[in-house]
Image (cartoon, rainbow, N blue to C red; front, side, top):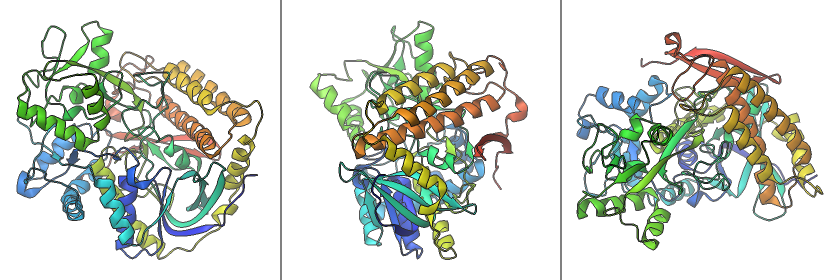
Length: 561
């Protein structure tokens, strides 16, 4: 058995040191929670999809938008951020979003780099713009500094492996200490827990370079955090609708709204009706509205699709370059410089990336709590209120405040004694030193092949009962084989092996949800149910694990009060 370190206690344990986790820790500490711990797999100063910056913050500011929130709400719900979200939660977020903007500015994050509130990108011409243009280069540094000032403790290089639940309530977690090559288990008792591990990659074959699974548009280290919640019976939502982002071809980099240009066919014709020239305020929203555009033009032979910035002024190009740096696209800029790629003279081909669980996952209340008492969630791993930095910040803060109140009325429970914690310890311990075992990459890529073949994202690829049934059979067999064959030789490879198992659980939840949705909607295309059922237009589908069996249930979408 891998050696176990002494149990530590936390009134509020934040699993994930990204934007959601840090905001949760800060708000909990501000609201009287004395023992707040952030557990981060990497290092909180530069972890998560916001590690190197962001440049768009969805919010409502009365001095810019006026006193009518309705147009902002409408455009937010119509954007990629509003997809698969409860309007009640989104409305509450918008009402309180400016408080976050002011707080971040106070911390030193540059929320108005030109000296005024500027809303640009991800917008339809003539419609209300809802994304504040800011410079998030130092956002992680500022948030970590504030958390430490408030007394928050950090467990960097600790990966969460399992959650504990006692009498229907979350009781803590098991972590893997990654600070040395020799692995150690770290059990944690916690009165309340926030899951904020980010979006899930590595579930499907990487679209850019299938043989290189870390060439992704967001943080590639986020893998299967929803699996932790799944195994203790937490309800998940919108898992059947994996999200697909887009960006430069072969080099996975997000930030498509930061480009100032027009998407065009090879003959120069604009692909969408929304932009005919480079526009700093609006950009070209075609790929937000027509989410599958880059796959469609390749499938029907009218592509490739190019980002054309040739008519942009020097001022616009300099602004775009500055914005890309604030978005965290330093690697892309370096590559373009090294290879003498000039957006003024060189069109850049765009493509659709692989399906990811971005804004798909844990179903939370408007207060951030999951179906498991004391377990909160924030950020991209939330299925009805995640996707985007602003939502992560707000939901993290809401969760932190509510968790702080619960922690005052809750006692510690022996999380380390839970059967599932002990079983996870025994399973992962069996991987260490196993001779002639299987590498985690083999298991991960086998999973990617199964998901890509049997539960693909539409529109050109389809699902069906027979495909999903076969896929689930293969996935569960793969998981059984992996448990008996995976080998690891250090703490790092053990972490990756544990992630591969988490991803398999996410795949199971996705496939079961896809089978339960007997219709075609968005990128969930069923060949055996080719129509969109209007009776499901106001319904979300929950999927969860109960007594070892997968359950599904429809619930009404929560409308504004």
